[in-house]
Image (cartoon, rainbow, N blue to C red; front, side):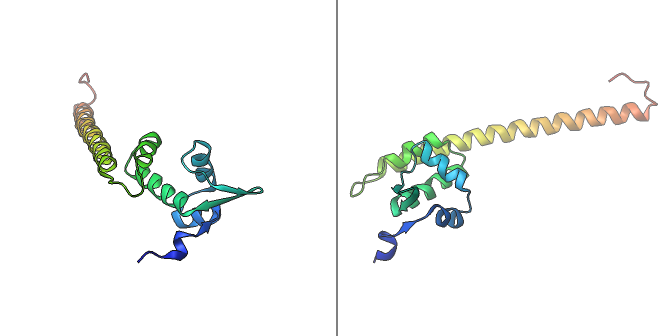
Length: 135
């Protein structure tokens, strides 16, 4: 059974920043680029449950390495009352793309570490031969 208190809740920017351990600057940035759209009461921003959910999903996407635009596209696919198969398939595609990129970076790092080890070994050999060997 849904929690009706949360369903109709309103949140301040401070509430959201504390809950998600982020800064007001970050939340305002997401607002500025249209990822979240709080209501206004004078100068005060009032965030809805939907804004809170969008912020949670944006931050999750960020942790997964997704761009803000990728997160926007995936979040915007959600339509209440409809199947979310297209949204999930898009998320899976983004996850796979990120994994491929990270695996390539990991391979590049392994190669660089090997190159560093070889360069270090060559330097140590040169030192052991009284510096008379060319690098």
